[in-house]
Length: 249
Image 1 (cartoon, helix red, strand yellow):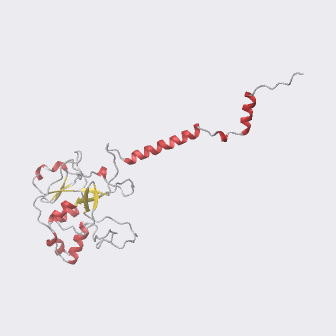
Image 2: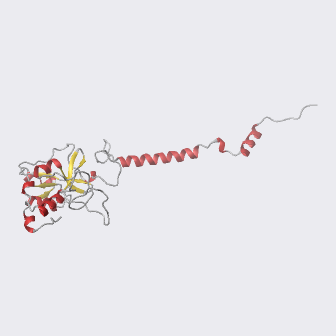
Image 3: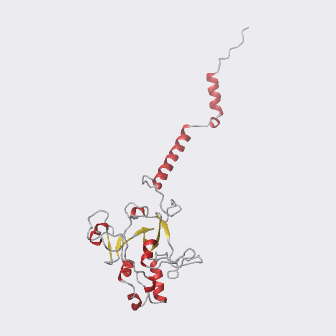
C-alpha cells in the first residue's frame, strides 16, 4: 500500500510503520522455505522485517508484533496496536476472544455503492457507528493528508512480546481463517469448530446426507395400506376365504 501524501509527509513515518503496512505476510520465509510452518506471521519492530517462527532466535530481545489473518487479510490485536499508536476511531472486530484491527483496507468490488450512512473517511467503505476508519492505513493516510505529521499519534513502546503459546487469542493460522460466505459463526465472529477440532461444516454435511438416505429408505420400505389398489385386496380375500358350498337338500 502507498500512502497518498507528499514525499515530506511520507518521510515523517517511522521506518517500522512504513514496512509494517507494505510487508506481505503469510508468505513462505525465504530463509526457511523448506521448513514446516514457515509463514511470515511475525513483525520485528526493531529490525523492520517480517519473519517466521523459525527466525525468532536472533530477535529474542526485540519488539515483536504478532500478525494474524481475518477474512484473508492481515490484522493485529488492538492491545498490541495501542502500544505503538493511537487506534481510536478505527473499526475493530472480535475473533478468538481478541479484538483486532485491519492493517490495510480491503479491496471493494467495482460498482459497489455504499448504502450506509457511515463510511471510512479515506476509502469510503461502509462502517459501523461510531468508527471513521476501516484500517490503520486509512487513518494514517487521512492524518498525513490533513495534518502532515504523525508524531503525536505514535507512542514510545519499549517492550512488545508475542502471546504465550496455547493462549485463547494466539496465532490464527491460514487454516482457521474466517470465510465471509460461511454462516457457521459464533456471536464473536469466529468460525464454528467443535472441541475435537472438526469443522462443523463437515459434521452438518454428513448429517444432512444421512437424513436424506434415511428418508429415501423409509419411503421405499414402508408403503401405506391406503395406497394399495382395491382390486388386489379383493383378490387376496377371495384366495384366503373359506370355501362356499351349496346347501344340502
